[in-house]
Image 1 (tube, one colour):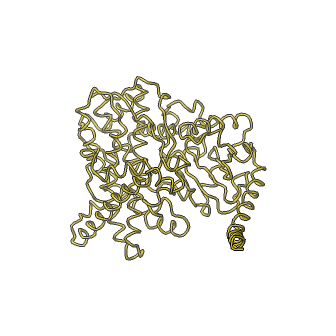
Image 2 (spheres, rainbow, N blue to C red):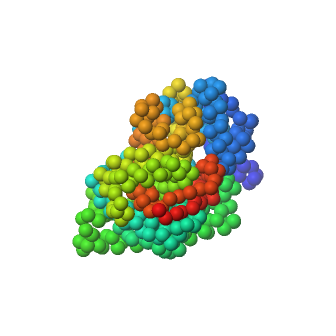
Image 3 (cartoon, rainbow, N blue to C red):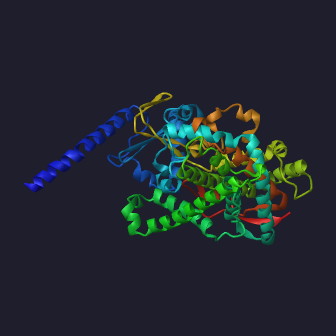
Length: 494
């Protein structure tokens, strides 16, 4: 009798949820059937075809996309992974519908693993909270504020090239070099704290940030780590929690110190950090200490890893294309002269047109953020395609930038892709390294300043050379487009 009662209780609890799940899948299947493309194998969909491997998946996806575009002309890839379906628009004309919407702004579950670290800051939040935070933070990245960060970017870029002097003539991995430089810049501009990760890469906070990124990516890509008990069983969660505690303690300590420094009037007006502006908004926007922490941690996360990826890939593209590298160097010298220690100004940046094209082309070929997901809250009309509620939309700069119907010879590094006359032939959304629309990257100007400043300092001092062709590089599509074996090039003093 007790067993029967337990069974009935379980049925009452699970039954409605199961019914909603079945109804949801049937609705997705019904609308999916009207969209061109196959449904994959019964029950498992396309799981085996893509192997859920971050090194395999991007290549197969691009191959599938270009074959589909050539053979059918359709610009929407449809995929099923078990009961989840994913739709990937493959050109600007189609993707602009999801990028421009002010309703379907909910991110997918890609970043769920980072919620314990970042909370629901600007990157992850949705709805009214996201709108409120976006409105509050947008003035932080006005060009008048960015001008105050230029001196910091120049100073840390100079430290970077000075440290490289002793390694001239060697083959080395440039990825951690530019990563530590970017981390120092974002720490000072975000928190007003000089981290000196370039001089002291083994300090606890630096190691904690690196571990959180690595472990978070590992958890997201390995399905057997999705259940939390499995992470504890395998010791992964313990490592994550240890790094998380170190990162949070550091941020909270800096917030407390900065609050006291502001109260004593010790922060110079021309050296204000992102954190200072949050603290000034605390009363007006009813921000808690946790609200401030999650936004600071969000910008630490977003502001160094993506930029260092962009810088690393630009160095790689230059190393594999010496003639292009030399042309960019000559332009830098024409603009800045022979003084190798002169800081770059905002006016200088506007004159470096060819270097700008080189950086843009490296972000076309190797976009720092290769995929971003949206979880549909309603049925959504995406151009000619009606996508089902609870389906996922993959916003993929990686795929669009390698669409051969948009970029002929799409895998070739060619800065002339960004000549004005070529850009005029493309849709504005055919190039989206910083996404676009309401949820575009709020810090894209910051990133563009930083990348141009650091690349200018590097090119003035050094030549970069690779014995390997550009396509030899192995990459994985994780939270960023990560070079699996680093950016290994020979660094030669000019």
